[in-house]
Length: 384
Image 1 (cartoon, one colour):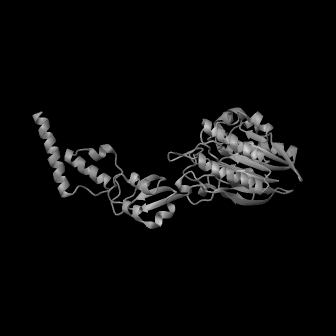
Image 2 (cartoon, helix red, strand yellow):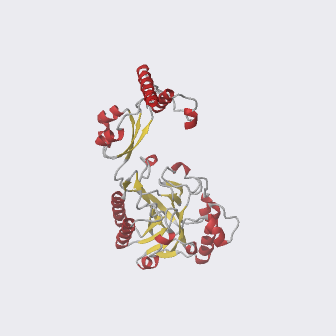
Image 3 (cartoon, helix red, strand yellow):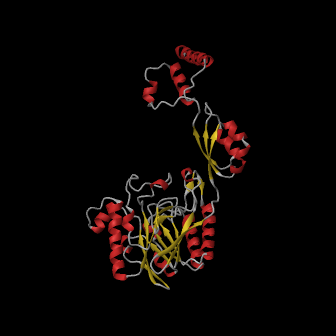
């Protein structure tokens, strides 16, 4: 049996104010071609199908189109809900979807009720563990302790093992959680499950033929039969340069006989540029990235005016600017009250200039103009 492990589609995600529907559609069409070319039997989606618990009509329509394309390509689809998904919304049409070969697992009650498929070596049991809120599971399962993802996943895997022991056969588990060992692959775009500290040991998944994990947005192999495939699209600049794709898993008679990485296209790469505004606008070496998503670290000593407008004239997909002046003094991390306490009006203006100019205060001529302007205002107030 050949399984394509995907996750974290995040349909409907907005990237720095820009919709990602068209880019994701391009990647999913490439995924369909992989399914056909590699003669895939099952596609699994390990959670975060949508980016929001209240997906738009366009997002729902896009999922329907993708699932229809997959089923027309002759594969079975198994998916679970992630922490971004609404289990009720994602699972709303699951009864009808099942008839078409799309199995949607969103409820804890479904954990020990696998989707059973068969190949030449016998049955393969697909268990889905949707994202679990420990506080909710505590009241449902009446188990103590039940305070963390580790507690929830350990209990859920106990249910899986008990069913598998009675049922027999090979096993594939889909889970949406943060497994120890994937810390180095996490990035800005992943929403913390519990403050970023609620980590599940990889040993929780021991004895499973293959564990298809979701939540981490870049590929991470945690063992021969355990790993993350990441998201089809880059979700933040911290993911720039990391590959996009899926794991192609081939199950033999005893379990996962082979796991290969399959590349998917990157419709618009991410690039970070650093330099003064004039350098960035003039440097011919940046021509190759003019069509990329661009983040710019501006190093001018004084913050340039209309920087974004000027940059977007050359880099239409420049979406983020950070001001990191070179050679200046670090900004003082003081509160507003501390900065203004006991200062005259003229001193306040000078402090403001030093703040926005990264330590470069007013010149003597500017000081003179500031004091003259303030004195003129004071005179008007007296005469008025």
